[in-house]
Image (cartoon, rainbow, N blue to C red; front, side):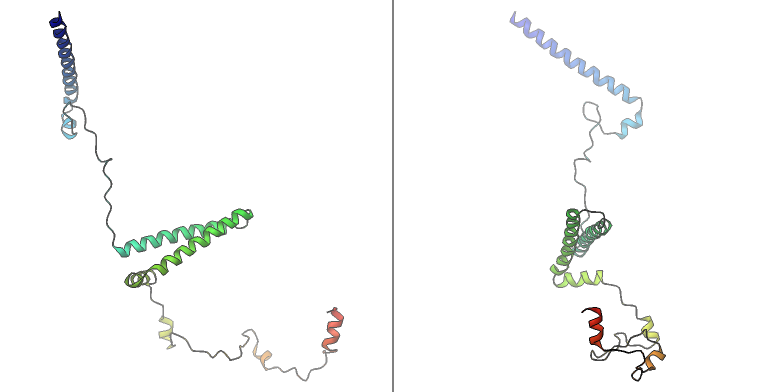
Length: 195
């Protein structure tokens, strides 16, 4: 009796395998109707489509040079600063005091980060960075055409400044001898005003 049970168990096992093979054959027959599709798609041993491994692999990134990495970091920080500045000035009148303080703090923090980043660069990196950021030359066309020194004239600090809004007649006029309208002293004026 024990032998019969063992034989029955093997029969069931064989039937299972037979059914699996039938299903494989059915899948192959269905997919064989479209031979172009069958040849293009990769398949496992059991005839089903292979799962693509593209999602599992990390994307390859291009290796940037050190100069480009520094510049990209600077641009990112500048974008953050410009966004904070825009938000601060856009909501300045509408925000309540706490929100305004937070916006101002964010604005100054981003500005300080940009300045710290610029100051943290040293040596050759700093030179390359400044050449790239401030790489535009000054426009000296007008100065060259009119033979004006580009740096401008050094003006002494002790010269009296002239008011550009005076007309020539106003500059030439002298009112020292005119006493017609000037009546009273400064003390009278201060007493009149109560000062």
